[in-house]
Length: 330
Image 1: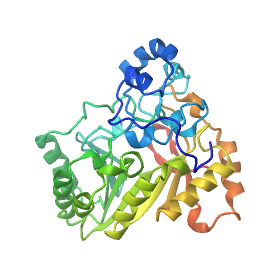
Image 2: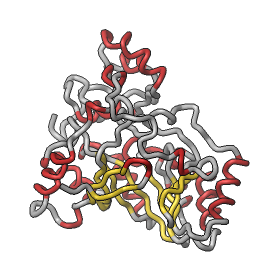
Image 3: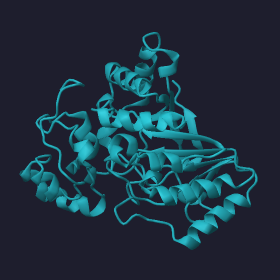
Image 4: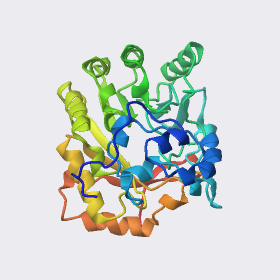
């Protein structure tokens, strides 16, 4: 289906959260439902109306549907796949905080997302129950950050931090801004492409801070930058929010030079600077998305000269045992 072709499946009016709802919406064949019922008990399902509107349910190779519609292959675990591929757990000094690098830390205030990607490296822990930190847990996390002067940057992740209400998000950004040694606040989110209606002037205002602030938008295909998504990103940009882009290299989604070029051009048109292209983390049941590193390196090399330097993200991977991101090299 061409990037600008209209969807063939009507968009639902609310987020679809079960195999039965996906079947009823025409996004999943009825014959597949019995095999996927067990899968849905283990891994969360959520497809927003905005995402469903981008899918071509009549195309089994549709790159949008492939990212979000469950597949029985997810029940198959390859020998090198692990529940916690980024090793968050060993680097968690207090609940909700991950401290892998000397000068920065992750803060995970919740584990809910607007959609649940079938390749997610936190797929064992994210879900609709939210994993929301209690008041006491969040205060303990903030106290740890305040008591650790080596931390210069905090990355709000999860889950998706923009699932918090604007009031709660504003409170959290202000609390982080009050920590003297923090210089940078970064937010990682799918919301601007997966649920752009959540991006309002109130939400944009909640991100205001005197600290350096960056919003890193996760998108993997050019079609995810719909009219509504571009409007949401424009609202954030006009509010002074710097926008970065991160993507995962995925088989059947963006594993061609043409798909990557279209993705990074779409990002730049939406004022999003491509920042990271991630090698897939080996989470359980994600082997169908895997692209070998050598192939990824060839794809990235093929973009040089045909794309502006502004459109060239760093191609990175997580090292085993939680040692952090490193460039993928031949």
